[in-house]
Length: 84
Image (cartoon, rainbow, N blue to C red; front, side, top):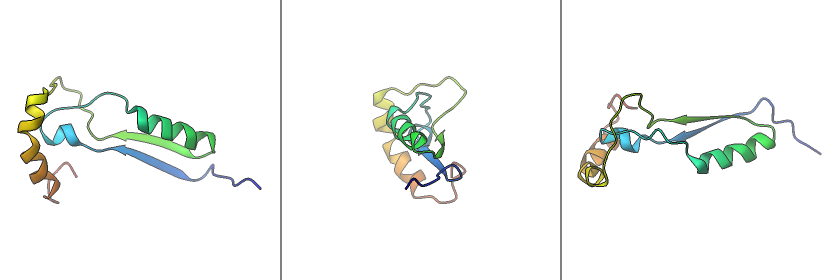
């Protein structure tokens, strides 16, 4: 017996880690892409949303990532932050 999954939708989300510290991550997330491909083969309607994507140019260095960790913690704990 095969289940019909055509009408079931799944949204896979890349969380906004780099945006929270002022950067961006415009790379394709391979892990979510692999998961999406398997689900797609099973008949699910899949979309991947990259909450870290930004159109502007502003790469973040590893040093800036470490410096921005405290800002990340503050934003994650602030439910009224516009990123949510």
